[in-house]
Image 1 (cartoon, rainbow, N blue to C red):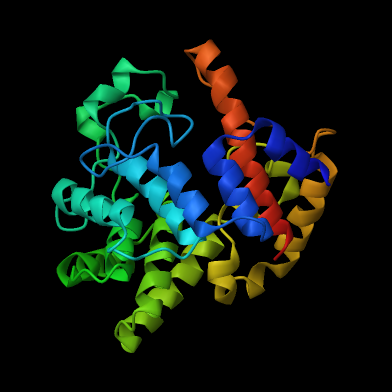
Image 2: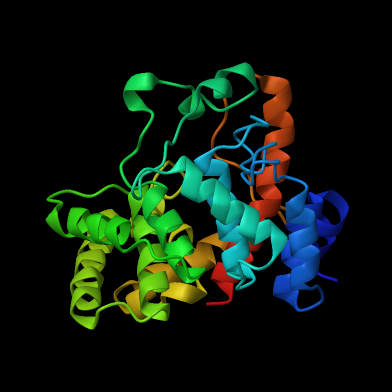
Amino acid sequence: MNKQDAWMHRHARPVDLARWKYWQGTGSASAVLEALGWYQNGDGGFGHGLEPDYWNPNSSPIQAWRATLILREIGCFDGALPLVGRLIGYLEHAGDNGVWKALIPSNDDHPHAPWWQYSHENDTWGYNPGAALSGFLVRCGRRVDSAIQKAIDTLLAQTDSDMHELPCFLQLYDDLRATGWKQEQLGAVRARLAEVLEQNVVRDPTLWGGYCLRPSMIFNESNREFQAPFRQAISEEQQYLMDTVGPDGAWDINWAWAEYPEAFAVAKEWWKGDQIIKYCRFLAL
């Protein structure tokens, strides 16, 4: 038993323990789906703190995106499964041609990190999370070609880039590649994503303790084709993670909420479980 395995069994949320056991080869996809289902609402969306910084019990596109990340981990895109079918219905109802709200008003009624405070003027964050949600729908067999084309055109026309949209576009690219999208467009998207990665991934280890896009935040098993130019940075961060892991096997959280200190004390433990999964997967690249 290693320290990460012990931490997860002693402290992790059931959904994160199920994810961990699935990745370790000792659990099942059905166990992940069962644990994830407790966060799903009657409208098919997700809430209830599935995103640990965001305790709104109501359904929101961001919480739905978090659910799709977990479904991606287990390769689950089967709309015939009740959980997935209900999620598809929610996404199709809540979106607007490939764009979903990042913030909803009821966020303010529940503990949350300051970046989840509702703002009508800033409630949509470009294609975060829309690119990934459109990709998920395509992966589930839905025809959302207009939304996909709009997202691709936006990505290719951008003169700057956003580190928060980047993971969503990478997920979209993976979905389009898996479902046989037009090869000429895929090539253009791939080239643009390679440029955006160069612009955003921080290679300097002295900056990794702050808020920046570290290799571990972006690279995983699904995007190996983009990793070659960052092989040294990946290796350096793998060593960095081994050097900074705590004696209990978990990594510290390097952010905090301005309000709701009691809720954050809980949320940061939830985040530790999520980080153990992410960092151990990254260490295995």
